[in-house]
Image (cartoon, rainbow, N blue to C red; front, side, top):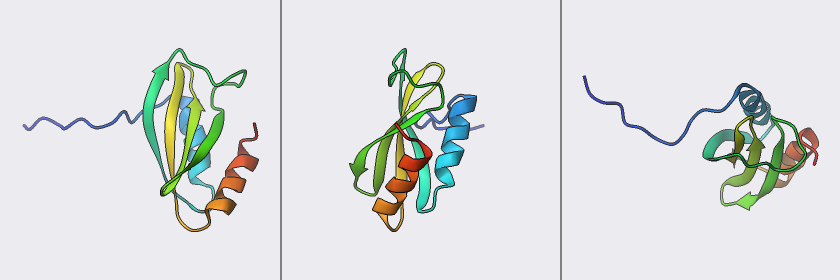
Length: 95
């Protein structure tokens, strides 16, 4: 039996999965990709599951998700109107 190739970290906690599902439901979002995880870090006084949109990059947006263990970077792939998608995300996750 061949060994499975390992890729990027693909898991998060229960509330993180809920947040990612909410992000995937935003019109214009094609995909949400989990990036690096930083244990013991915090994005401020927010609670687990909070998300902060950090900025625009080629093909979408970067953001940070607060998990029970620390923070995770997320890349949000966008199709169509970036401005409208960013506005919808900011309304869903104010702060």
